[in-house]
Image (cartoon, rainbow, N blue to C red; front, side):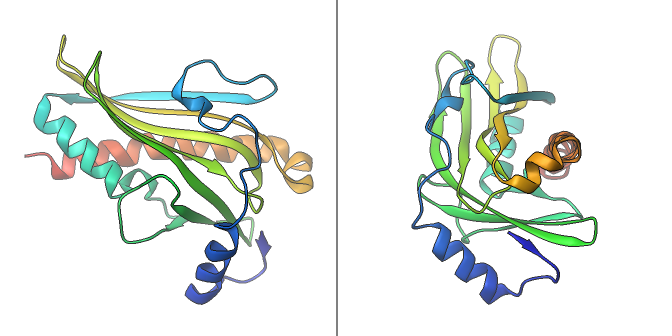
Length: 195
């Protein structure tokens, strides 16, 4: 949804409530569980080593629960005061090129595994009022073999609206910027909060 002035809290709450009743905009729901993306989408896969050890992994998990990977000066996330859980609808409000863009997503799944790696994360998928169509997974991993802890960001998307098709090169640059800044936000959150 494009807006020429910043929406207030009630407008965003109404937007989230309306979007929460709608279906995903793509048929391959939960496809980010595997590394085999569906055909016809752009794929982005970015990773950063956050450090080592169980304590750092637990700190990284908490950073994801607190949505600290979403801390930017040009983008704010509007969500319930709770960690991610399947079915939860969120809205991302971006301020770009002098306009406000409000995008809606729903958490598809949450994953917490201990084999073969320790993994915690979640994915969300796009709803009708999102510029793109697709899914994105945010995950932290702890490999006990080498004690390394990673933040892994994996997404597939394609334009979901006419304007995002027309502005595709700009949208792709913003997606890449989001990935870079998300990696840095997680790195900063872990460094700040790890004992």
